[in-house]
Length: 243
View 1 (tube, rainbow, N blue to C red):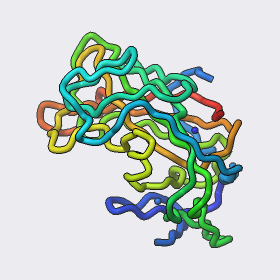
View 2: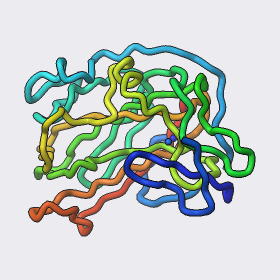
View 3: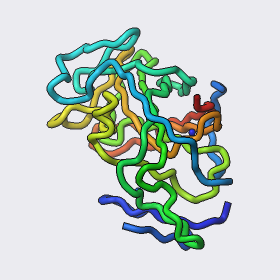
């Protein structure tokens, strides 16, 4: 949360390294990567019960909190709604993972299997929404770029290169009180994450109840020159099981 080929076109980048093609996107921790073998399908289900809105109108002021979390001044309100599935523990950060809601995809994705021509996430397919609450667990301020710390899930048997398809509709995220952006509008980098401060960011992907997913997170701070400081890059991961 392996050699078939798939490609993903987004407005910014082309993801897919080998012969890919697209149509019109338990709590143990380590620090390595892997390429997992089967695509996603699931029984449909639709539910949502988040407790905080991700809209700008509800963004509030610095220190907006939810439960044990204190939001950074530039961050959208934090929601700890849903069921906690696990945590990722990096050297200077922690990510709590919550399964917030299931729904159905509002449109076809941009992932297509080259051989079968089958869209890997079609309109109406079940999707699951995960919310990641990232907290600075160090004693020092961490300057982040616009890439922030963006955890990403992938089923352990995912057989395609690249990430899993998702429903990019911002309306769907807002419907569940979530944000795929993490920051308030008009905020500028560096996003300084103080000790003990948090922000949240969500994603969705094809849903299969009871399935294991590997979640990886990368933190690359922004240097004083405005560039990413790769010498201080941190990576961590964990495995979760969807409810």
